Length: 109
Image 1 (tube, rainbow, N blue to C red):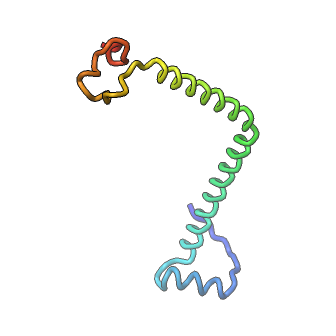
Image 2 (cartoon, rainbow, N blue to C red):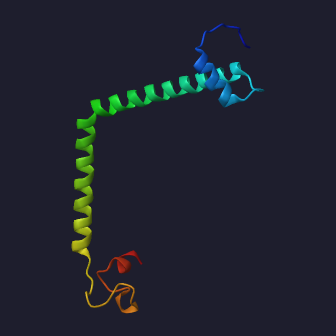
C-alpha cells in the first residue's frame, strides 16, 4: 500500500535525479528506492556498531580464551614433533619409512 506525501527538493537535486532516472522513469520510485537503501544501510551499520561494542566490551575475555587455545595448540604440536621417531635421511614418502615401529602410521594400523 502506498500513501501520498509531499516533499520539497532543491532544483539542482531534482535535475540530478532526472539525469539519473531518465525522462520516462518515476521520481517517486527512485526516491523510495534511495530511502529504502539508506534505511537498510543505516540498520546494517547499527548492528555492526552494536556487535563491535559487544566485542570490545568482552575483548579481555576473548584475548584470554585465545591465549589458552594458542598455548594448548603449541603444547600439542610440540609434543607431536617430539614424539615422532623419524629417520632424517629418508623422506616420509619412501616405503622404507612406512610401518616402522614408533611412527604415526604404524600406530594407526
